[in-house]
Image 1 (cartoon, helix red, strand yellow):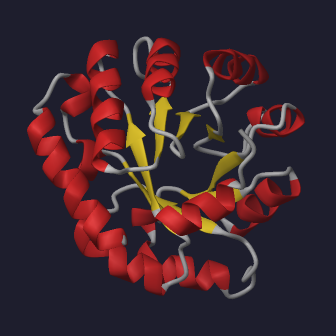
Image 2 (cartoon, rainbow, N blue to C red; image 1 turned 45 degrees about the horizontal axis):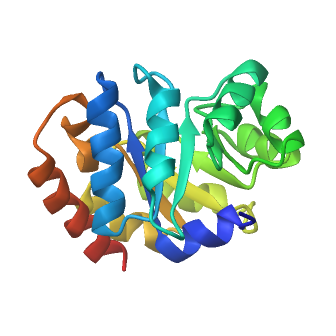
Length: 207
């Protein structure tokens, strides 16, 4: 499947971040999110059995969905997630996995906080910059970053609750990445019905 990660994120405006303590629960979480209409999800490699979860979620994902891997730090990890079927890579920082993913043709959402990191990530071939943790500076910080870098596509990630969405979009984020406020404890065995309700609320807020 050939796709433009930047365009997909700009269209859907929501990236769901799955980070949990149980493989089966992570799979159930990803499956539920996609069934509710979330189109882009990532499974953090800090989740036990993350590679199996990525493969399982990808295998049953609706057409047009994207399933990626998060917290990908090394070239070896890129090889692992590619083998598991991940369609894109997310990092928490400017790390060695970025050029390796680019070499393999996997789009990267690269974590960055400072102007230097954001510029470096794009120079390394990242498709988008994941402003992380976005909550450390909020929408005002994102706007300040975008002033000198208007062409860098930023995705705000980290502590982005429903109430914060309008501010980040107004500051120029093409999308938001949401873990805890959306996923809650579902990926650790929590309530999937509550997860679905939160997913519907985020989808309504980003549509």
